[in-house]
Length: 194
Image (cartoon, rainbow, N blue to C red; front, side, top):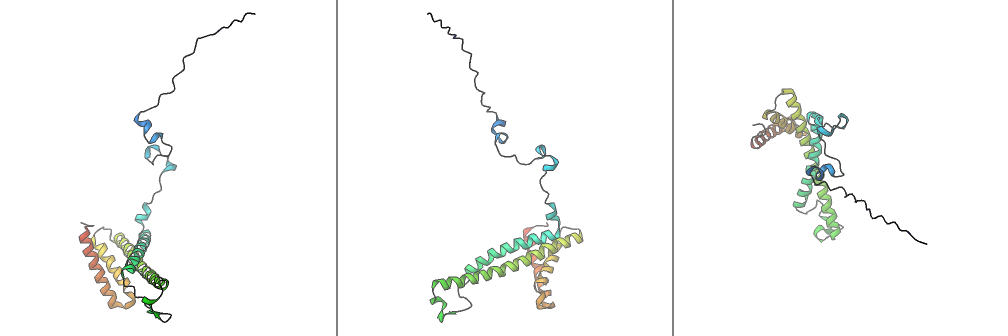
């Protein structure tokens, strides 16, 4: 028995694997798996970003942003001021002992209450001031049709009068003048309407 082995040594050449594309475009964001930032070239009309211009044009939204931002700043200011004030609480005797001699837990509880009360107070004050100032400045600017320093002066007057309204008309007039002058000085230093 004869075995005939036919060995074909005709090896087909292995195709080389695809070369790696090292061009700049292949190495940039186009090849990464996360979406590209929005641009007019790659967006359809349904993909347009939301338009928040109404927030900067509406007086109600300006007042709301002022209330929110002022409230947050007031909370931070209250914590800061609460930490800097003396630690003497309004009640100096707890369970028949003076507070400095009270247990540490009672001292901490009293200090935390005082700081929380101060934070809430400053939060309310800042929220009121920034909300009234921002809203009234927007209303004055829309009424006058001008963007100048006198909008800030008038809204400062409105804010000062509103803050002192509970104390009567004389206190409101003083608050109006004080806040208007403060707004004028701040605006001249900041140079917002130069």
